[in-house]
Image (cartoon, rainbow, N blue to C red; front, side, top):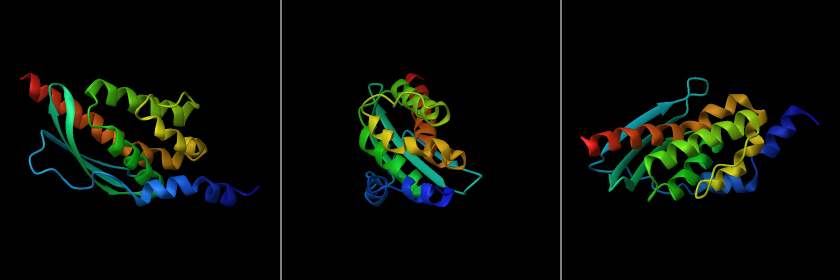
Length: 150
């Protein structure tokens, strides 16, 4: 089987459906933190805004300029992140990285929808784009948490 046909299979109907329906694409007017991340390899960018209340994400907005894989990842994150703690978001990010790099376990619920991206583990040049949403959300949640404690 050729590498090109494998890549075509990677873009499954489920990934394309997620990419076409990203939730929470409105930026927040008064976020507690905003973080923009860019993948230097492909140029994908994700900017996230979030607010925390009582140590949990209370609102979230994102601007996603990424390939279908990055968009699918952002769709799962956008649908799962409200109500999560900064530690849960960091744990999900680390689990996603482990899943992609070492075929580790699927990130825990409610981020388990990221399992759809497991086939991308063989395409290392796509990993950074897939990780953008959780990288940005992790940094934003930690920044907002530090401000909340101050």
